[in-house]
Image (tube, rainbow, N blue to C red; front, top):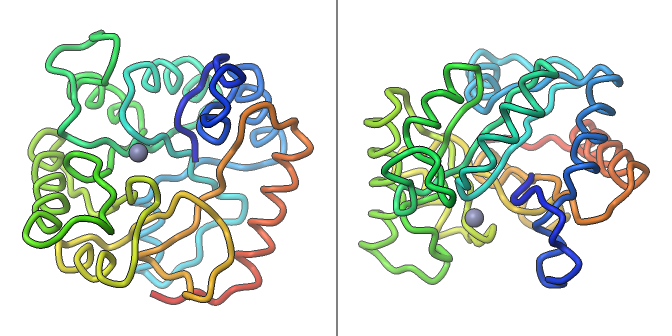
Amino acid sequence: MYHHIGDWGPSNPGWSDWVVKPADFAQQLDWLKSNGYHTITFRELLADRQAGRVPAPKSVIISFDDGWSYQGVVIHQELEPRGMRGVLFVYPGAIARTPNGGGYISWLELLDLEANGSEVQSHTLTHPRLTDVQQPALDRELRESRAIIEAQLGHPARVLAYPFGAHDEHVMQAAAAAGYDLAVRADAEHSATPDGLLRLPRIRVGYGEGLDVFKARMTQAELGVMGSNSGA
Ligand SMILES: [Zn+2]
């Protein structure tokens, strides 16, 4: 799970979990590639699940949250030349009307990224902390985001990233009722609640973490996947 790729982490200590240096990011991608990992999308993961298949070994999903314009540039410049694809979790409340707006990404840019194999999925409508949102607003956040993404991009958007990772049983039930097949957290911590398709963990890559930390996180994640029997 990535958010920002940039060099401005140290002056913003609170952001150290949300920013990765460009040089570190490139090194992480090179390590994945040279160690036999290949990128898949959530749609492919879901298709595997629905067919009763386990994803191929060394499958990895590289996700970016929030829909910043330069995340598209990063995918074009860093992922695509390495034969990799990404997944962008966007919220339609902040999508630019025109490309190169400098802030949020536009639908045209998202269409272009999808034409090259990357995937766009839902990060709600306006990015609230869903555990604080009451019905019917909760349902609107979940359903309208899906509907707008599906209308703009022409494919089902049945995967959700909880803003801030905030979710509970009530939010998970609302997500399922709104038509999501799969939802992801913003962490990979162990908890008493079993991991299922509506609370899949993600590995958070932090600022200034060397390749040794990244490798350790990947290894732990693989052991976690192999050691758990997370059902739907
Ligand atoms: Zn977010």
